[in-house]
Image (tube, helix red, strand yellow):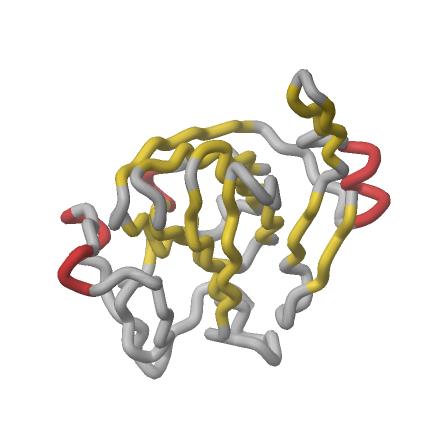
Length: 183
């Protein structure tokens, strides 16, 4: 696998080695040994999958301490714009974000360490999105930030009038000047 650093420490893009021939292709989407050696030691405990149609924006989500999550995300069908926002107050990139195109064609994955909010926008007609988490889902720790927060200034690559957000995500608050979740 090829590990590509982003502008935010700890947030990396992973390009698997894909072996293809006339029958199709094969690639290793997860190897605990290789991941620990090249990215970080992590023990994933839960896999999730969602299917969404064009215009859906999911996020920006995170879990409050002590149930913070690292995630390894990928798009297995279609194309999404995947976004991770640094919420670590002590980080030099606090409130900065990285946006990466993930698709069934490029087979890229994004590793999002603890201390980030995460979301994605569906750019294709439909998309199947999969992700691994290193902490179980805890509804009492579920939190998020409004995806359209002007402080973050994320270009979701979808016109606002075409965006489809859940009522829960629409109701999320924007960041205030005292915002602090993770140290």
